[in-house]
Image (cartoon, rainbow, N blue to C red):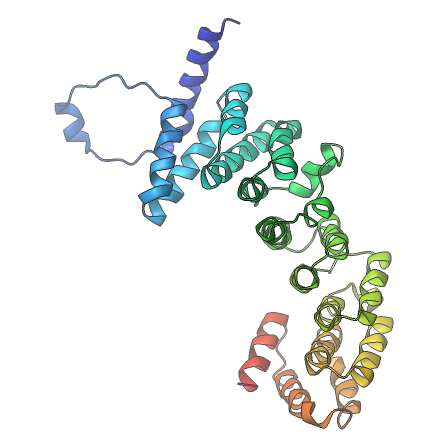
Length: 332
């Protein structure tokens, strides 16, 4: 098909795709009085509008422009969109364009469209652009996308980036994907988060991943990987592993509880001991009361922590987040 015909075709589709996003600024009576005029819809113009919005627009307007771009990208020829992305040098704009490309890839069920964005995430010379490319994948099934692209670029690789902003983008993506895309129910995402944490050189980054990603679907091998971190030289990692182990599948609960009890009895770091108590309670909920009572006096300074958990459990709250919030209220 000649390029001119193809461009005209996608502009027609683009107009239809974005019509629902355009604000209704005139009433029906006004429309009757105002002659219609032809408007040329330009994706390049939308990108220019995006730049202006990112620079000086309100948060609501920036959100609107980004969403409109994502919808428009579905109708745009892939090679034209990819050309824009490959040439982009502004991190905020690249992130928004990456999100638009991810939307197109999902809509067309063609994960290979994201190869250029993955390549920039791994290999761009500018750290800010690498981080922006990673952030462009947020809110998508990015772990699955990476696998479908042959695992050439992975989060385990990206977490070792020399730039802190890239590592932070990796953590944010995985935490968001687990919680907001799969609602904690995807085993592959959870196990990828654990493997990514173990690949990290920064223990604080690893600890954030382990403590904030859902572990409710992980397999036995991953539970063992987490259990090994209870012996880490880094207290943050030990505490994060204890927190993570509190959320593992019920079939693992007995052996994991024994490991957390041992951690509480032997570890000298108060924060690690608190994390062990949290893990024990989450594993057993109301059934954890006898275990908590058995731990009184092991670390007398933390007996008030045990008492707070016992009081909160006595309220018969069935949701973990509600129980945790009530316990924290009691300890203020």
